[in-house]
Image: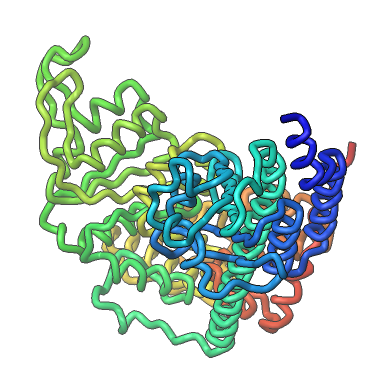
Length: 538
């Protein structure tokens, strides 16, 4: 018996020599894998080497794809290193299916004499020796490495399984690596296409910016908005936005400095919209203590807290069918912001201390003199509430950004004073108009109105002289109020001027360039190379 074993061993070759050849083959595959241009080339070498080193007649490498078993043949080679024709018909589907289902390697010394003999594909192909191993990436089987011999039994042994696993691992690496590369190429192509589309969009937008802006006039508005005075380009842009959203129930967030007329704009939206027959209810959240604001908004039942001697419906219910104006929304307590957001989302309001909910039918117009996005970043305003309120955002321009409106506004306020005094309309002289336009008006329209009331009182029905105006604010205070540069650094002043112009033009670069008195291309160049602010001195 021992002599027969020695004879078979000599036929198979020295085991140590076989193992050395297989190690060398694996190392060679590693080198080819590192420099592979195509996965087909590497996989072909892998299958050819496996057929040679394991003494197989044929070898197949299959990967996940279309087919009866959800796989497809990538490589099919015979011992003469020729491609096998019609490979799907040349291998045992039973063997492949067992390996895919069990996730383990399989070998048969004689498939005609063991449990595989009952398989139809084994009988049809007259298979004798079979060796098969799954290709794994982690716990996922992505393919199969399959070797067989139709004419000779005992070609493979159980000790061949670990070696075939090493070859299968190489195949798995190739399939996975090139799959990732293909996905990256597809993603890169998609990104390139998106970039091309974006470039086309940018070019179209650049052409639109280069085109002359349409001339906005009050005659184009569907509503007169008599309370919102001014025909400057900055004010007309605001009026046209308000005109479009007045007939909707969309929430509106009004932003702008103190005194620009946010509440007047909110009333104009209400009066010009479909809710004009309902109530306009305004509340300054900064003027009401946090502990009282909740009951003011939501109402309370009798006995809800000390002093609640009667039931109050609250401002939300009082504004039913109309408009609720929330001024200085960023000053509202964060916990109350959450409850207010829930009421808007559910369209229901529950009074403090009550267990009954009431339907909420109100349009909300909010306002703030802060930058709302900065308020979100600083934790003053809930981001979810911001998105709920800022469906339409309208930034009202500061008075200094609508210089053409200063004198007409002054004449309007003086005319109101004259009517209240039963006197004829006053005349604004050229000198007074020049003095009004020369001021920066950090308090905006509110400051201008107060100044005209003061001027009327001091004039006592006489001439409205520039000398009767209040002393102008010191330059340093004016700069601080306006958020201007704190130094005379030229770069800082230029940055500040560009930012103010972009704000006044609502981001329209062509209009901003017009306000700055420079060409549009010059503005683009300055934006592209705008220097960073100088570092603070230690």
